[in-house]
Amino acid sequence: MPRLNRTPRNLRDRPGRLKLLLRRQRRLLRPAVLVLAGLVALAAVSALIRATSPSATLTTMRERFGHAAAFAGLRVQDLVIEGRATTPEPLLRAAIGVSRGDPILGFSVADAQARILTLGSVESVTVERLLPGTILVSLNERRPFAVWQNQGKFVLIDRDGTVLPDQDPARAAKLPLVVGAGAPAHAAALLDALAAWPALQSHVVAAVRVGERRWNLRTSNGADVLLPEDAESAALQRLASLQQDHALLDRPLQVVDLRLPDRLVVRPQAARGDSSTSAVPASPKKPG
Image (cartoon, rainbow, N blue to C red; front, side):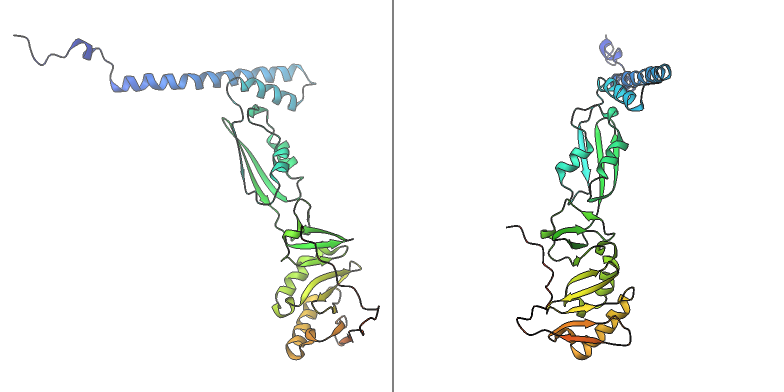
């Protein structure tokens, strides 16, 4: 009588799970090993060419190496941009200088970073090459802090006074307005001091830099408040007391002179039609 527990021949010859797993891993690893070996060979050939050809530049070698590696599948497949809010995307992509399908090892991270930093709205940037096919760009953009009017033109500036030429000032109507040559470099100190006195800040429509030395504040009723050089905080504190006790900025005044610490000089508004009345700084026009 035949034995019932005998294992069929085809089951005895079948490889075990571990053996099957090893075979599968070998099939998956074989292309990667071939690519790695190819890259090592390319690196060795590149080093040899560079050693025997002094005229070969690093850029040339990188391009040759990148094109050779592209045959092994190392091409740009994806461009990821993080942190972009105000930088125009076409300008940013042109500065990055890479397209889908380009050899990823021929792409210069340092050159791309240098080009991106020429964009006025970019404060810092990190560019990474993530093999096998991704370029990652992480931006830290400059934030608009104020609108600067100079010689009839309006531009946005950040806290450091850097001009942001790629951004439309008409879309930042709520930002403070500073006027005149030299205003951007000193705007943050004045505006921070003014922000400590909300009752004053609500009356100010523009800060005008005078002679690149000191500030005048233009108020909503047309008065000019003359601040002393390098003593804005003390003068603003004094003005806040005058406003609280006497509602000074609500009166029809043309000039409030605070340049002398022990003296207050005020000038009433001129009669209607008097040409001596100064003009109010213009405001940036909204796009029609």
